[in-house]
Length: 260
Image 1 (cartoon, rainbow, N blue to C red):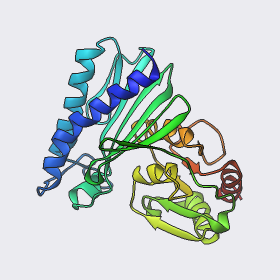
Image 2 (image 1 turned 120 degrees about the horizontal axis):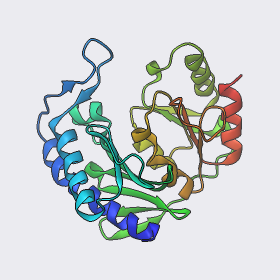
Image 3 (image 1 turned 90 degrees about the vertical axis):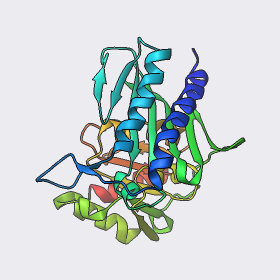
Image 4 (image 1 turned 135 degrees about the horizontal axis):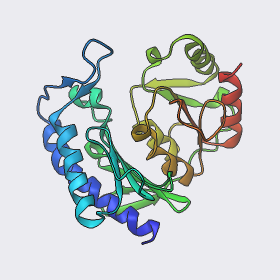
């Protein structure tokens, strides 16, 4: 199958997740804490139900593919084609009744993300990247995505999920980035990368991300012409640091500021 066909299947997976998450989003969710005694890490029945729905469709259609999900772990990790799942990215926003949470789905081939999907069900926006392009889907309408032309930090609209998640040298680096940017917005989780692909945000810097957090972002950002890598400007995301920028020039400037 082509990546375009797998992208269409990813849309079907997102539709299945919406059937679980949207009804739950209008109800009061009682979260559990996956990290009792440490930093609050919420999970809800909707997180688990959405991942089960996605997994069931993959197993029915591609039983030889691997699956790595936030809630239920990994099966067939050795498979050349593997689906990366985060059923609700931004569970804190979800339990607060905010609309910025997303569903993240990626297909990896040989360990590299080739299809990425960021679905924002509450605003009915689905961002899809593959084969060097990216598009925004609202109902039956599709729009090609293009990152902004911003090349200078002083003109950039910066986003991160929570500036208080940074400590030590990371906190100092992000503060330099914030002081140098034109405006900073917080609390969007993966939706910030979707809006970068759409041209509304120019720069995103985050840390402590896991593969299910960033795999889907990569094809969407790159498909829209943006740059995404780690804080050193490399493709190794294993340390959890992710930096995305609208242009190569802005990316390079941001790398320099973070490492100063």
